[in-house]
Length: 150
Picture 1 (cartoon, rainbow, N blue to C red):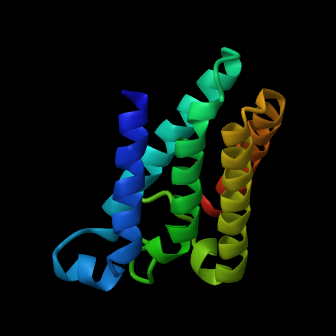
Picture 2: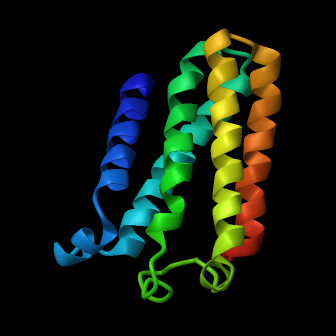
């Protein structure tokens, strides 16, 4: 079941990566709602990873949700176009638009942390995955501190 959810998350995020946001707007999709849905999927994958690590479970299945997070991280900067600063109960801070280079660096750090976790999960290295999970959480938190309202 969890593997199926992770696969769905990867598919949804891949679709988001290839659908230009301008086309999404033309079809009436709200970029704020789209990014919030994708962040919810990301949060679910991260919660799953943390739960497996906390339970000292088999880390090999964590490769897929970590890859999904890495894929989302690559797309994040495209999901905050000008004009999506307001509305839709967004928690995005203005710094996303005033410091796009910093925001892109934060997304890159998230992607790098998730990619490392995926690699270590594939190898079955539980100790490394535990450390990677902490680093991934720190990457998420760092972005939240600078670019997300509480």
